[in-house]
Image (cartoon, rainbow, N blue to C red):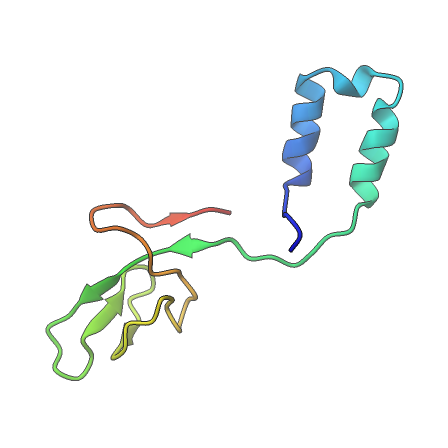
Length: 93
């Protein structure tokens, strides 16, 4: 599996380290600009919250969607249900 990186963040780091002023610096920027891209969505984390409903017993902490079965992800918004109790929901993207 390929690693996903932020092209802009890498350019910023290269500028900060003065690497771009080296003889091959402009070539590196050109290669970054033409590098292939992939479609990717940011990973979001949430947790199942218990509800008082008899029919629906779990609710996604991010989108509020209710489910009878606790999957390891929310079938509605796709959030990973791996967030420990007491931590705030977050986006990694």
